[in-house]
Length: 419
Image (cartoon, rainbow, N blue to C red; front, top):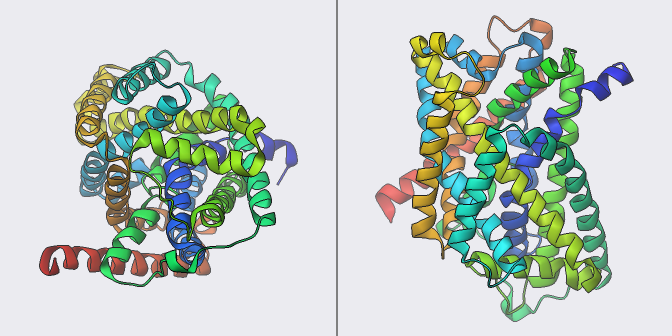
């Protein structure tokens, strides 16, 4: 790889990391450590490993064919686009709602007694919609990369500080993890967005193409994968970092994370200030807010942009009349997304953990289907053989599909026939 060209290719992987480092890390990883200590480290690493191929296929396919994964689904048949379309509609409202509630909780804690949490959610969604529709998101995206790096550095420092204080859980409050249904359900919720939902792989393929258009340089497959691996490995390391913070500061104690978004935000920021000192409050507050705002914006921007071409693939007549990147079809999907998100938030506002678990569980249940579609696309005849996955990656894909499917079937059977 040419170093200059590699630098030109950097971006989509970091943007992917920006979308992934949000609820899955700030909320789910920290909760995992607080509830079970270090018992889930191996399982979290396992899910990062078995989901790796399905995320990697996004930039691999885009760089090798110049198409998005959505175009690849169309090559499989119209049924694949319809299936992706249905799965996206089924999960997007709870996903966007969960992310927005966590963001609103942070705002409510950092800026108390200004607005209610629900008012914050409405303001966040409206302002975010304005940003993405007037084209200012690209500027924020460049800034957010530096803020994410700042969050990563502060997380590492906080973990090191917490480690120096030792691991002293109260034996009376230790909760062992076993594979009973309740723990399996929690595990699926943790793993649903670990490191993220698989449908983000489709977004990544779009970002890879957009990056190529903006720079005028088409990255080689190795360069696109190098960019992706930086983001992916970084998110995996941070997930363990947040789990460690939760384990060292809360596991075995009488304290538990609240299901109220505002209270949870205070507990989360306290994890850092207790280990870094009160001086770090402003830095951590800004970093956490910026990270969640980035995730909120990314998802709010991605869904209309993905659903627009998906709708056009299903109804070709619409594409003839609407060739711009953002048109009435994009606006329509944005409106639908906002309406559905606010309805869900209205009913689940005081049950943040329930909403997050619901959203992440839905993402986990759809993971085997989306993973299989990605595998079929990357091994299609239009992908040059030299760019198709090596044997080890194909084996890892089938191992991942088997494990994800087994957990999904177990969960569905238990829910339908045992509970």
